[in-house]
Image (cartoon, rainbow, N blue to C red; front, side, top):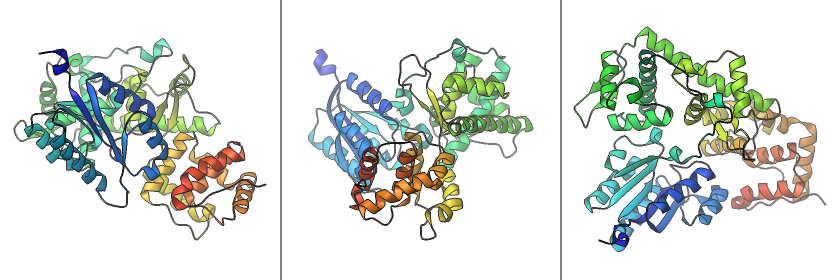
Amino acid sequence: MTSTETTPHIAIFWDVENVSDEPATHRAMTEKIRQAGTLTRAYAFADWDSRRQMAEELYSLGYDLIHVPDSKDNASDYKMAAYILDHLLHYKETTRYVMITGDGDFKLIAGALKEHGVELWLISNPIITASDLPELATMYSDIFSFRPALDCVRPEDCDESVQSIVKLRHLAAVQLQEVIRVITKTGSKPGVGHAKHVMQSLNPDFDEAAMNFGHWNDFLEWAEAQNYIKREGELPATILTLPEKLTPESVKMSAEVNEAFAFMAQVAEEGLNEGAPYNLMDLGVKLKERGLEFDKFGYRRFSDFVLSAEKRGLIRIVAPEKEGDSPIILPVYDVDRMQDWFEENVERIFGPSVNVPKTAFLKKIGLMLLDTQTSLAELENCLTVPRVKEAYNEILTASEIPFLPPFQQSLAHILIGKGLECGNIVEKVNEELSPLGIKLQCPA
């Protein structure tokens, strides 16, 4: 058999609504897939009206963009499933299918691929992946595994702390309890294999061998004997659950870990409020000065502690612009935090006729704060400072538009507050207004 015959022919089907990250991750993932064989087709499915920047990015990477309006429930899933089945019928030379999704709706498709004897490489965020979907795949990858490595700017960022194996075991068991809670919260059942994927995603330095366990199941057996977890059912259908009554020590340790991550996010937000985000080095110094010892929570390296906080959606690590500089750390505002903020401030800041934005827009505003490196406090300041409001109203008057929706209004105020030229402000806001048929212009 020649090398050409053994090279996989690959097709990619990406459910962008379900799985996505930042541009550097998308580039690294796509390149890794290309290196694995001959790429014949690459499709990405989403409502591209609300993802214009990502659309340009993925198009440049060679993806065919399949537009699916988000007003239809599961429309993207149905469209992607139809494309996969059509490809399976008409392109029999394809030997490896890459599905980038964690949606349980694709279990039947995964089963169909398996029956046809082709390989399935599944890529997803394991935290929100249907429990038994990875088990149907030939290969599985956590999308975060394609993120650029967090380099150690200082030696101490990667210095390993020394802890007893006994303590590491108990800390890992508390981490496993969190994994079970996280998976259960998404509506899935924590199977043995799925739990390990999530464990490794949330805790990058987890290694059962480092705790003298020969296998993942040996660790589970020990954790059950110590009353950290329960196992129900026989393999491969075993489900992990929590005991009805947890030990006081495990409850205390779990609370301390959650408080440590929340504190890190708080300090990262404080840095942004002070005018510039902390870099990795500064954040480590600040946390140490304020008494946070990351190794107490089962992390041998500070960089792993930071990565773990990012996996939990509490912070975002942004690569430095200059080689050799330290990455910067930004707070992440989830939908719940945005919901609380708008409920408290929408009438005061936006007026009595404006409602709290829907979930999709709350998420979008949270991402906008990340992209513009803006804190909630800074957003509020931009929306209320007379100088910014005056410049904003001048643009509205010149455009003969009475008002903008909260998302575009927030973006305009942030860009004005950050001192951008009017032309750049109008260009960026108009990109978001184009689906509404509205267009801003600068004052003459």
